[in-house]
Length: 228
Ligand code: SAH
Image 1 (spheres, rainbow, N blue to C red):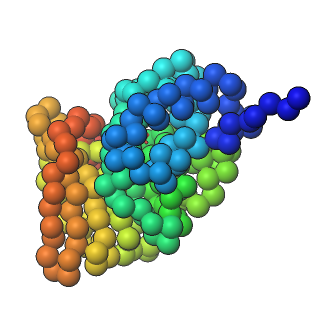
Image 2: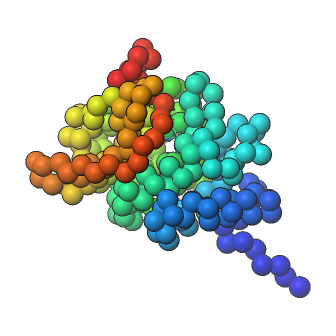
């Protein structure tokens, strides 16, 4: 008798336990993704445990951030769900992500859009993320090392921009690289103060702004490590 294989099982990466725990996690945060099937399927398909250091495997399917070294963190799954939905990704989109970190958010987005350009300022994190993404076959993601503050200009304008580190103010240089009608999702606010997750939408020369939720992100920094 053949057993039913979970369609989200990743051969060579998952075992029964990891898929089962991923399903439970994603079910618990469906509301944060506003019940959006494509976003939910993308999160079911990405093995989050492959993006964290091995000593965190046992917590990879809890709804919390985890440390990934260099003082940085992989975002909380509920926040990834919220930000991914807020971006309103479409299959023909090219998305810019600032703050690659582990590569997890980029992997989730890669299942929903045509291409993801992601920038990370800490080189060893970019190298590890690129290697993880490559080994898992996410070949529509390109990892860049650098300061994402002014974006990856050769690929601009973008259909959407997602920033996963918090600048104190909205980076105008990034807004300038957003296509008309496109959305930019980012946390803004001081490192140790109140940050809010916002969505900005370009309408010609106008920018609409909507606030989604209070959040806590690592700061967006300059090359010397000081806050942006
Ligand atoms: N999206 C990540 C979470 C990132 S944490 C994930 O899914 O794992 C935020 C990341 O932003 C950190 O890795 C930090 O080094 C990076 N970062 C901070 N300032 C930056 C900047 N100016 N340009 C690019 N990356 C930056």
